Amino acid sequence: MNIDLVYLWVNGNDPKWQEKRNACIGKPIEKSGVNCEGRYADNDELKYSLRSIEKYAPWINNIFIVTDNQTPSWLNTENPRVKIVDHTEIMPPECLPCFNSALIEHFLYKIPGLSEHFLYSNDDMYVNRPVTPSTFFAKDGFPIVRFNRRPFRKLVLKFNEKILGKHLSNYIVTIRNSAELVEKKYGTYYSGKTHHNIDSYLKSDYKYTNEIFKNEIEATYSNHVRSANDIQRNIYSYVALAEKHAHLLYVTQRTSFRFHIHKDKYYSKFERYNPLLFCMNDSEYATDEHRLKAKAFLEKRFPEKSQFEK
Image 1 (cartoon, rainbow, N blue to C red):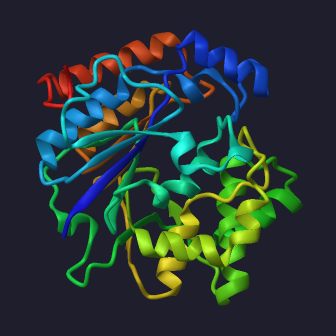
Image 2 (image 1 turned 120 degrees about the horizontal axis):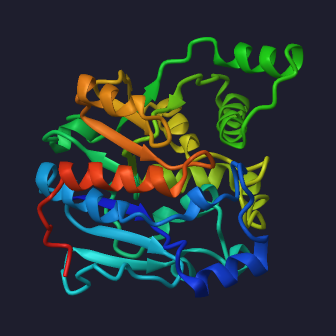
């Protein structure tokens, strides 16, 4: 099978892009989980992610980079395997401009030329050891869905919110939105939480999910920044599982590792677990100092220039 790879990428350091963002949703807010510097900062993560792909997943077919009228300055655009996809090519006008990755992700299946089997990655996700197509797709061609095990998640979230009065983050709320929609449709509540790393999908399942939840997804079209009614992309994995078009696999920190760059302890944890996949997660808690340290770590991990660079 041909397996493509899709990235979302933004250069939040670009003054022209910043002007567009500020006019639409306002300037970044310190410690905001939905509109902070860390949500858009470009620390050359994509360059190192592509180096990891070339080193450990050279069998990847085409690579699509979804952007907002931008191209990485270091990218070798003459490489036939790399294609820049502008938001305007896949998203309707009412969504634009868009600074909400949760919304952009609903249109990945509309990428021209995208293969039936594809992987999706944020630009800060990496492969750390050799992987094969069977890492992501089973022999029957169905995707392997990787979740963190959360067996009592529905009850825990309800208890935290209703009894303890805790504020749930936007990220958690959007995951719950997905789970509740699928429960209403299929009668099953999938409590697994996305592992926040490279995921595998079938384009046909992606399209089908968009069709059956058309009204709910269209209701988020005006969400130019992350919002409470967003539907997290794990809905595509939940539906694939409900339709028996996927295989569920729970992860450990040895298979999927989420690295919070503002916490120094994660560097030693990473060495201890040596995970298969990892994510260098920027956030509202990270500073430029944290980003410099993360970039030095990635440069040491993936020092060799890839064919995707000039």
